[in-house]
Image 1 (cartoon, rainbow, N blue to C red):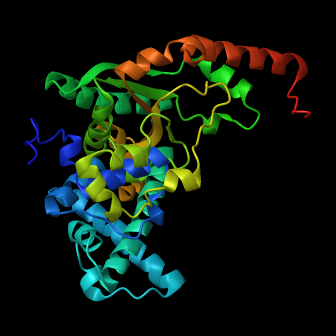
Image 2 (image 1 turned 135 degrees about the vertical axis):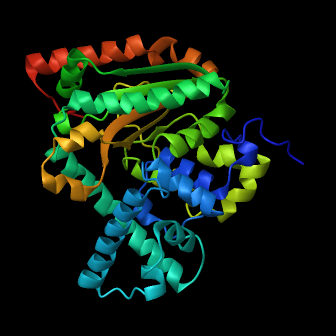
Amino acid sequence: MSTPPPNDDFRSLDHLSLAELEAIRLVLWGGSVIDWHRLNFRDEHEAREFLRSHELDPDQPADRARAEAIKSSAISFLRRNFDFPIPKPVANRDLTALLMLASSKGHRQLCACAILKVMHIIHHLEARELLFMLPISDQELFHLVEQKVYRVIGGMLAQGFPILEFIGGRKNKDSLYVKLLSKPETHAAQIYDKLRFRIVTRAPEDIFPTMNYLMRHVFPFNYVVPKESTNTLCPDRRTCEGHPHLSQLLPQAQLAPDFEETEGLHIDNQFTAKSYRVVHFVVDMPVRVPREVMDSAPPAAWALGPVIFGQTEFQIIDRETEQSNEMGDASHDAYKRRQQVAVARRLKVGFEPNRD
């Protein structure tokens, strides 16, 4: 029998639920929740916690009204474009009940999943539209994101969670210029690490629990940016099959156990050494718009809700791996040297494709 966790809010590998493991695997892979066919919430507490990770409080009338408006738009879209049959008992459920229905079985479960997928898109697009309407700069948005992350990580450190080091910051302009100059296909809108946070855990087995805590308190797993994740540190299949509890959950997961072998490993940086190990992902993090900012927005902004998103990069690594990464070709200094050489060459002679 496993021992109870020392802090129920920070769940060890022994206490992760199927829903939490599914979320972790999605973020590690950099997949899209649109491709899922079910949820796995055990009870309404988990479902409501998930809503709060979106900065939507199911106990607040205004937030409930906002969720209902998004749901109505999603149902109208499905009926208008796909003649999608939505039974009234499904359409009339509130968002918490809809999440629970999507975690069940049967035809109504499929309907609930379809509604939630469209809601995911509508909420994201309307939050983007809201951001364009607001009198808020990138730097002010970054500050809102930083406040949220620092508050949560500060609480984790105060409670003695296994985090040995936390570094947050904004990429300086010279670093942004070098990055844009180093990759022919990159433009400014594709730079995801303008705002980044790095967390060093005590041991490798603390990485999944740390990710899980962040997904419940900082960002919802469904807003991970697809195809922008790199996991060279915690091989999914080996990590799960090597742990008694996770190995029991793995066969129930909707992502195949061997997806890493079939999908391949995603490493999108030509300057990163092959020996470098890290868990890296990018998320659209929801933050609530301060009331004084909403008061300065045009009247149409109020119909779009109180939430906007800021793209943020996270790196999570354990102490031993961090020390190994700082040796030889994997070190940050070696990485920067390779990048500088490539940029200098491109500035002098342009991009030269391989001539093998």
